[in-house]
Image 1: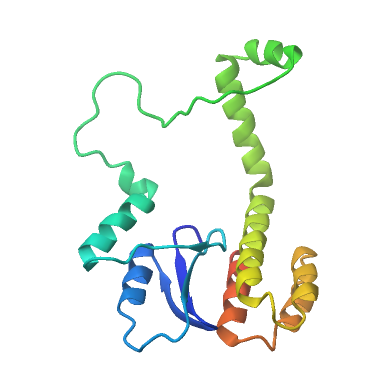
Image 2: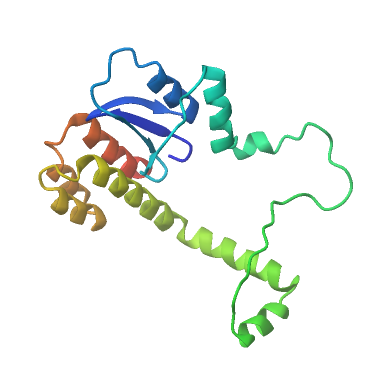
Length: 193
């Protein structure tokens, strides 16, 4: 769901897709909209504001600054790379550890930075599926809180979502507006269909 957005007008889904597709769909909505438009980042389930002023080109230019191109597009340089170390996007931050941790890290091949990167990569591989499930559940809950917080059985549905009881969850939200219900299920379970 990373990099996709969905716009709702009241309880009706207006558009879903990339930031540009959704922004232009909202901008071009032909019928007078009697309810406010809410745009959601599908990766987080949180609402986001797009600046729709100006012509399409200006709107898309502002969105490019908001959402950089995918990593594959960014990795194709316009010029051949010169000598030296490649730009890896390394970010320096402070890490606070006990002295025994620093001693162990310092004794590792490649030093503390290499050892920490390996530890993080191993942890990401080991818990990747659980992390994705948690992120999907959190995104579904954030969206659900905004769009369905006052609908019947919201609290029970929230409990079922966090208990990962899919059958109970889908049963509790079965009578909710179709577009809202379908989007919640998509956010929560699309990677586990």
